[in-house]
Image (cartoon, rainbow, N blue to C red):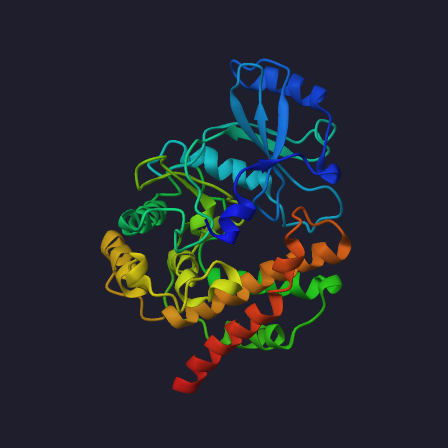
Length: 358
């Protein structure tokens, strides 16, 4: 088992700063979750940096998941559990695998912040992209299962499921660059980084031509999904906080960062012997997605990688800011925040490769 697999798997006692009384929640669940019976046991999932997530076990032994905004001062667009609830609920009637949702509660007197309830899905979560806890012979099929899941998502007609106003169609890269630039600049606690400042200038001036629109997850990586207990397919995609309407290739290229980042950086596997591990190459993985989505290659992949490294650096910068302000929800947040500067440097290095070709 890898260090990440051991560190983030399972549940733990609720951290004191994120605890709440069971009574009000029991009353709420009795009203909104069919078959619920008090009392409850509340545990906190180890994984995740942004929105605290809890496993609720009732007197019948039935498990439900509660996901809430963290306490304290928050940026307006961050920790959007209401958007998570909306997109998962809408996708519940499609072939995209998501947990069943029950209710969204904006009454902060119950847990101290806005939250929603969804099914607990029993299955496997892999916390490292090399799938160290899986058998070598099933790793290629597991990777293909993830590939199929993102292709399914990008094939959904968002208008038909009521998500026509879930984001602004078009100009996704420009809007995302603006959003993360603004959030980076506003978070004074985390400080400024030279590579981020250069990217903020270069990225919007070099957006590739062409545009598409679909539902994008925003954080589609292997540890944000649950696989079937014994079969190599995805049964639940989790952590939809960053989802919106956007360019599918931004979403897919983010998923492909696993091939470009070193293991010490952020769930990467660059430099590993993929063939020995039984994992398909980046070229093979991209070809499978193109085959499923009817594409003839992805010519601007390097720009999309640079964009996503910048975006990921922006996310890490936000974690670093929460560490500085004392509102981080994970004891590993400081370690993650420390990756902000090298991630920004990696993004600028990708940009410099493109600059060198022009």
